[in-house]
Image (cartoon, helix red, strand yellow):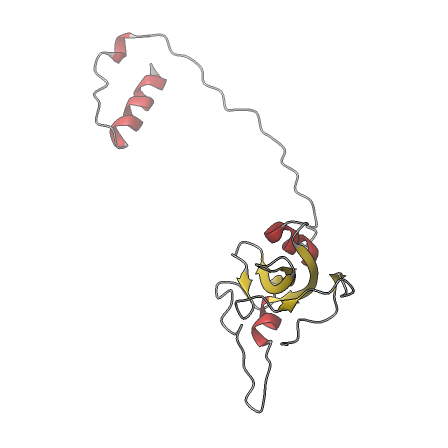
Length: 154
C-alpha cells in the first residue's frame, strides 16, 4: 500500500494528473522495501590522456588521416603566418575550452583525394578546417604520422 501511495504521489506531482482513486484496495498488507545492494564502482586512479593521433582518428578515421601534430587549444589559437602584420586565423577556435586542453592538428586527404588539407580538433568539439580549403597536391614522399610542428602556410 505504501508503494502505491508513493507512486500516486509522484504521478500527481509530475506532469500527469491521473487520479489514484481505487488503488488503495489493491493490497492492504505492508510490504518491506529494501534498498538495492551497494555497488562498488572503482574508477582508475589516473586517466590516460588522448593523444593527437587518438583525436585525429576519432574525427576522421584512419583511412583519411595522413599526419598529426600534438597541440593545446591555446597553442592553436596562437598559430599565425604572414608579416609584417601576422595573421591569426585560429585565434577564436574552440571558445568553450581552456588553453591547456589537449588538441591536435590533423592532416587529411582533401576534397579531391589527390590533395591534402589541415584541420584542428579537440575532444567534444567539431573539427575546424584551417584556412578552409585544400592546401595542394599530396606527395607520396611527404612525411606521415606524428609531425613535430604545425603546418606552414603554402
